[in-house]
Length: 219
Ligand SMILES: Cc1cc2nc3c(=O)[nH]c(=O)nc-3n(C[C@H](O)[C@H](O)[C@H](O)COP(=O)(O)O)c2cc1C
Image (cartoon, rainbow, N blue to C red; front, side, top):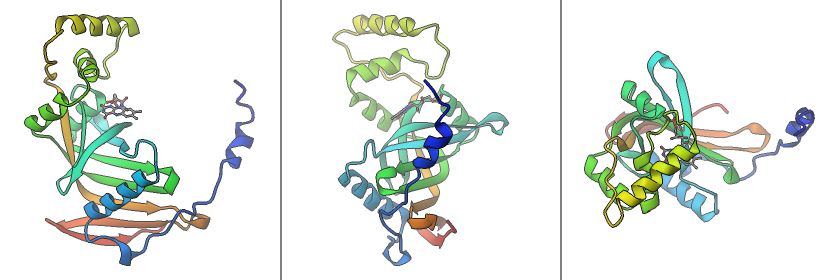
């Protein structure tokens, strides 16, 4: 592939953000209600994978890392995702249980940034969620030590097929390290792209239990 024209191509990708605006007076009293409203709008607009979010962590040596996860639930206690405690993110979160989640909805020129402390979800809830996953996904989780080095794809596929046979007719046990995590927000930013890059950024920061301060940040 010829990348020599990238420097000409990239400027052509520029576009204005014209999807909407954010007014203090229209914001909900807490970020959860506001997030719920935006999430519904995102689904209504037909945004692809609206619950996909970038998860940023930082572990030993303060080395940052990031990846996409699917947020599987949210309520006033926080945002829930599932992963393997042995993965890089899992190890980061054991070392430093703080993270940021970034939702990006380009169709609406919006992002939501959530920062806060992360805790393991109650094991009972994790087990319930795991039990409701498609069997194939349960088996995949059971044969994968996420983020470990594997010799090749064949090795993983062979292990998968072995487990399919071994567990035929039986439920797939949840791997002990496969866990739910809940990020309890301290800070939630709602970003709306606006024309001329004069974007709206309204941020909720947590004062005391259940009480939030709303501030506008410069674009
Ligand atoms: C659309 C999408 C959804 C994903 N959802 C998850 C998820 O919910 N949980 C998860 O552990 N990994 C998920 N992944 C894979 C992660 O991005 C990542 O590759 C994996 O978790 C290992 O990350 P780590 O080595 O940084 O821990 C998803 C990837 C994509 C592209």
